Image 1 (cartoon, rainbow, N blue to C red):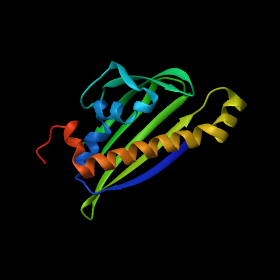
Image 2: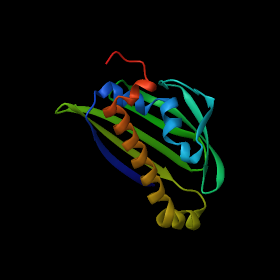
Image 3: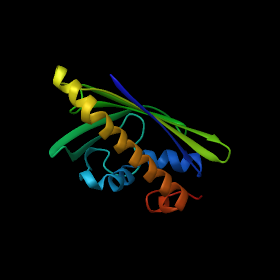
Image 4: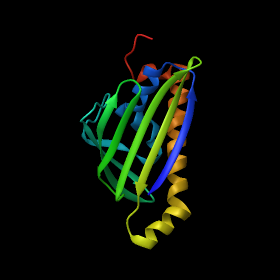
Length: 160
């Protein structure tokens, strides 16, 4: 199993960061480069515990589908999603949010297993782990930028 751990510091309230991270609309906005769109389950708004979303996107010039379910949530500090269908053998993503020094510390732990035996493991070492790390980092930077700039107001309905 491959695990990617990322920490992002955001000068914004924890609720804004938490909600941007689970916003279907914001996710689609931040993944335009791969044409990612929600095609099943929760396809708009904020995903909740027990709900699933099926994403369709193009990665490595191949149209792919991935379904994840939110299996645990403790708003606004934590949610955990797990792949139920998709290209990975398994995939889990833990999202944690903590408040410290007038900022939010957003932690991601993304773990996955690749199929195709030795060829899959080699592809993971040479290409996939870096690709996934870059994808997650880019998305986290977009969450940070939207939360800190007020752009979040286009995607969320908050009083803050």
